[in-house]
Amino acid sequence: MSLLSDRVLNMSTSATLAMAAKTRELKAQGKDIIGLSLGEPDFNTPDYIKNAAIQAINEDYNSYTPVDGYLDLKEAIITKFKRDNNLKYTLPQIVVSTGAKQALANVASVMLNKGDEVILPCPYWVSYSDIVKLFEGIPVEVKTSIENDFKMTPEQLEAAITPKTKMIWYSSPCNPSGSLYSTEELRSLADVLQKYPDIYVVSDEIYEHINFTNNGHASMAQFEDMFDRTITVNGVSKAFAMTGWRIGYIGAPEEIARACNKMQGQITSGANCIAQRATITALNESPSRVKFMIDEFKIRRDLVLDLLSGIEGFQTNTPEGAFYVFPNISSYFGKTLRGTTINNATDFSLYLLEEALVATVTGDAFGNPDCIRISYAASQEQIIEAIKRIKEAVS
Ligand code: PMP
Ligand code: GLU
Image (cartoon, rainbow, N blue to C red):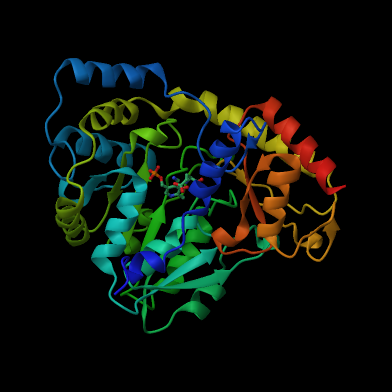
């Protein structure tokens, strides 16, 4: 009998977290690595949010919270959904979790049975596929093209649907491509789903506020005919620079939310009490208070695209949100650089780590083996230096 379960043995390690760990290790050895691998804002949590946490500690918030979150936090989430997304959720439809990651794992665990298929437009966020597999679902990858801005078309969606399709999972703004689905594009996907009333949608909107367009953010649940079969996932990690605070949440059909509450009650209980109090302030304040970070991400997006355009063999789309670029670097496959043969995106990413001392993430982790992901949640100086090093290493 093996010590470890097949479950964990069959699971991949999170490539983003593995690269972050490797970066830390190399830095500790004194290597001058520039980390562009982790999707984590390099800003500090704003003071008005930190002060809410300090106040909560001083007010002796220290007990277990309700499993699905403090009542006033759930009210703040309802207000946020209404204010920012025009979504009308009620209290039993909200569950607060330890990060959007746990929210996603909850949803998979309460909705998937063995063999249920989950459509994942590629590239998708690294953990979707393994979370689905953990709960015995089957990820069905739908390849998108850079020409279509890495977005799934209604025809592609229709072609991927089978009698076993249970759900579709996507993020918009997308990690790793930075693409946004417009209201019209979501509507055309929803139109396909009209023929399949049993298929649910997980709409991961954690990058909602990191949007560089003037068109605003589009939610699948905004459509009346989709509201009852969409799970809207969000959290404070990204826009509020609160990755380590670990608060995410869902708005979902009541039956699913209740099931998530039950599942979470056996696995972790309620999320951290201080972080929940701080999240009330983060959500109740106007999102305009964090706009300075979004403005800076946009400047960096333009900087990265400009610098990458000066390197041969990096094909990019124009990301409209989040803080990643996802260049296609497949023209390097088969080439030998400084004695190292590059066979795939993993080789390329490792080559950049070793020769340019720049950490990126292989596109394989996101279901697209022709690309690498570069996070520009780093200072402009670091970005300039990193891309200069990449250029030298591939010339
Ligand atoms: N969804 C997407 C698309 C992400 O990029 C992340 C990054 N961490 C998460 C979910 C999970 O976020 P968290 O658990 O920090 O709330
Ligand atoms: N979501 C971030 C990323 O994609 C954080 C790492 C993770 O949670 O996997 O890099």
